[in-house]
Image (cartoon, rainbow, N blue to C red):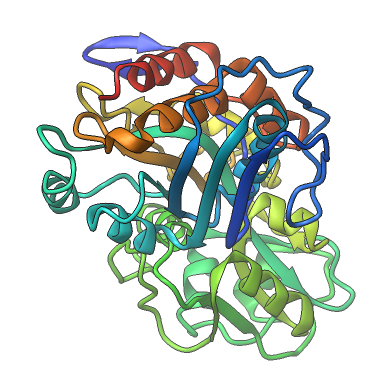
Length: 377
């Protein structure tokens, strides 16, 4: 597994991530292993985790719903080990998180898309003497989830997904879908496709995949904002999941953990490999194996191959970044920010999300992130 940065190869395998729209984390010394959404902390307790607590106080973050459950897992161990600290993470989507960060309202933002040049420039107004940088903390895959009576296995490819979400394919028994699913009885039913209503890094990564792999069927630019025709919309990953669960003959896109939590079926993806690729963390890790660091200096933004045809490589992937100031962080929250992020990227922090069904970042990449976190000022 290789990563390139400044001409040098680096090993990389990044794991899957989970979601929640918002959560509040209070480090109060509790030994309760239950997260705010009912998930457990993957068995990681204060006794198992080695956490160097900060000076305490309040730390605010916001953004990606894709990383909410990962923070929720981390909160159990961090809260049990540390006291006097209140960490509040509000979801709202990647776009909202970046906006709040660049307005100086939060110490860190979660985003499933790296900062754009204009956003980096805007960050300089709040990062005195520095700028916002992208630190990969968790990685995942986007499941194409569906709710079709009598259909337990479904295969789609980028072209059919693009046409479904653009209202060009409107029936489940359309010949293009049937050709990908020999032997499967598909109903003569209208397709109910659901997309995110909020600006979403999940949408951005899905549309990057469609733009790269659909052979021109997706005619819109990759974006956090949904642009295609028709369909229903829902807010956040939780809203999209609930919509698919309740609406027959529906289809949408959510991160793997929400598919699992809501017991939604996920389509296999035909990529051009010898057989369709199932939506599993292990198959996403195969894609992440060839990711490259595209950022420079303290910025560790990654470049992903959405059009991969490698055997067993799931193509619809995302990375969630913590966006922080490399310099110019607020003095009152800097110590706690570094403490929390140091735990999150540590072996214990990564094992905690691994125990919860995700794949931890490899040591070489996590070491790079640790180095940047330690140098935050």
